[in-house]
Structure formats: structure tokens, C-alpha cells
Amino acid sequence: MKPFTLSRRRVLLILANYFVGYLFVYPMLIGLLYSLLEPLGIKHLQPILENAVYLWVFAITVTAAWPLLKEHLQRFRRNRRTIIKSSLTRYVQMWLVMYGLNLAIILITGLSSSQNQDTVVQQLTQSPLQIMLVTCVFAPIVEETVFRGAVFTTLRSRTCFRNAALISGFLFGLLHVFTSLLSGNFSDCIFILVYGTMGYLLCAAEEENQTLLSPLFMHGLNNLISVVLILL
Image (cartoon, rainbow, N blue to C red; front, side, top):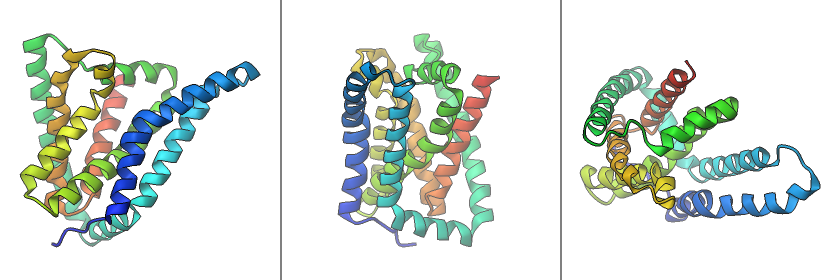
């Protein structure tokens, strides 16, 4: 099936909104607004600003990617049973691979979890509802749209699967240790291997099923199970 790709303008908007806005500019604006408005005595200001950013990033991402999302949703509807079955099979394979990689990291380095995982655990105890929505809804939809919908699909139309998936997977892995690198925690770089492999396998799921709904389902299921296990 011929790959459906977004226009260059839409891809650039998605990438700029996420990599420039979400990772750098929007956090700076939150800090600035918080410092200006805190003296007014507004309670719970920071969560409000954070939720506004989540909604903004989500809205821009989905709106910019809508032609792609609409096409992939139609593909899913035409073959939903096969796609769901394939996605579940691939999820089990992905979980086994990631479990093996995490076990190897523990044995080699003694690190049992990444800073990203530790942050999620801590935030779940403070704002469980917000973090559950971010982890199980926002992250799968936005990240899959960015890394598989914009990055992988665009590269796949220009090069082979391996190259496109490696680049998309590496960027996905880098994202999940981004905060660690900024704080100087370079030991967390080893987890690029885990998250990058996950990203690569999510690309494989999209390649096989020809719809973004497959990796989105796998990503959401993975995060949901992780959150439930943490809460238990």
C-alpha cells in the first residue's frame, strides 16, 4: 500500500510544536507566568498551566496530523480484527524484548529504572488522575503522531524501513532520557537502548499493519499496564 504522508508544512508544524515548543518554549513560559501570577495568590496555578500546555500540544498535533490520522483510521476500520490481533502479538513480543533489555541493564549497570520512570512514579503519588491521563492518553496519541506519523512515515516515503525506523526509534529513545541529559545524569543514556528499541518495534507494527492505530494501541496498552502495576 502506498504510504500516506503529510505535507511538509504540516510535518514542520508538528515537529516544531513538539520539539521546540513542548520541550523548551512552553516550560519556559509556564515558569515565567508562574513567577508573575503567583504573587496574586492563585491556588494550584502550576497544574492549571501544565494542563493548558498539554491541551495545546494535543490540539495542535492532532489538527496538523488530521489528514494522516483520518486515513489511518479508515485503514483500521477496514481490517480491524486482523490489526488488533497483530498488534497484541507484537505487543507481547515488544514486552519480552524490553524486559530482556531491562534485565540486562540491571545485571550490567545495577540501574533498575530510568529517571523518566522514577519521575512518573513520583508524580503518580502526587497527581494520579493527571498523570494517568498524560501517560495513557496524551503520550500515546501525541508521541505516536510525532515519531511514527510525522518522522517515520515521512522518512519511510524516502528511504528503506530500517533507516526510517532506526532514526525514529533513536529520537524516541532520546526523548525519554532528555530530562536526564539536561540534569547531567549521563548514566541514563543506557536506557536509550530500551526506549529506542521500543520505538523501532512500534515502527515495525505500523509498517506491518499500515496504520498508526497499531503502534498507538500498543503504546497506550504498555503505559496503561505500567501505571496499573505502579498503583498496585
